[in-house]
Figure (cartoon, rainbow, N blue to C red):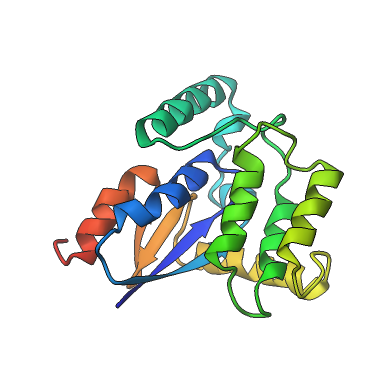
Length: 193
């Protein structure tokens, strides 16, 4: 059985689409997936880049492209009321939802990603965040210093591995970046590359 690490930040619409497509893309393969939330802004800062939503023409193209991709793949998507937004509360909630030192499960990731990318609401609306927190029932508070440090450590770990964007998939130390890398990832897992 192969192991995939899925590095992501819920701020990324491509991470959401890749998450939704992953089961179909890897159908028939014996795999295990670990989900690793990281701060995309930390990756961008480290590599000296701006996020796609920070450059207005690129932002317009990104959302046009994302909505087209979603239709192509049959995935429901709605742009959040505010984007970009600060994803720290959601990232920390994901980290807090896992056992200390572990990674969040697929269900927790699904709830957070769909919280952002379905319905078109404000991802950081306090009432919505409270409801999401209640549904996830994390063993630790998202504001716990251990949670904050675990997110910092995960982002530093991603950087040490050479990860520059999200989503990134890692298999046996090899990195595959982006939604469009899913076929390449599946090919690798079938020992073709």
